[in-house]
Image (cartoon, rainbow, N blue to C red; front, side, top):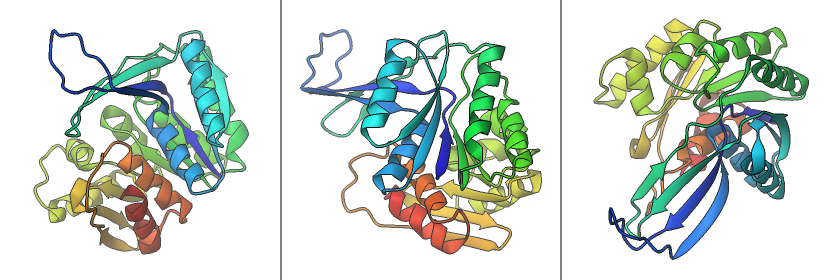
Length: 277
């Protein structure tokens, strides 16, 4: 079982529009609703591959109830943590040429009690998990060190942790030595404080993150492929995609593939590349 944690989940509403004209009344040609958030996307990809997954989510209000309902309909076990604030609703406007304009809401502010309840729920389910995937930005009310505390508690319980976040939250968590970190190219560059022009630059940056505490670094480099830098070696993989429909969720799907294949070595990287494609 793969346990996912999404501290700031969302209800995502996507509207297809002929064109995005500012100041005009736009008439959508189609619409859909999806449960959103990086950890949620990991669970959706794991479930689509017919593997068991449990999604831990702070949920509140009518949007939160709908997120839980949509996930259950996809065969995903939900471990909800009730919160006072309503789960955020995000909006995406999709144009025919593939351009996607997104408006992401901030989401609720979690209290200290809700934060502790979230950690407690994770501990309840951690024992049955082959991997724990902690994904996405932190909501208001949770300090950047929250992921570091989660990694420390998970390791004390004997669990393996994959972390997909960025900025201060990532840097703070590295001191607790997460087993895998999953940045994209932009997040990797941000973490080391310099631009990355080549795959070789990305390799050096990933090695730097390992000196900071990461066990392995699985880096998504967009259309260029994916990179795995670990204690056993450095590996690179890519997959040609004839017609790109969207890159939304590709990195989350790749993390799902990586963990489902064991979370280490070139075979897991191959699975990550395939799932991302």
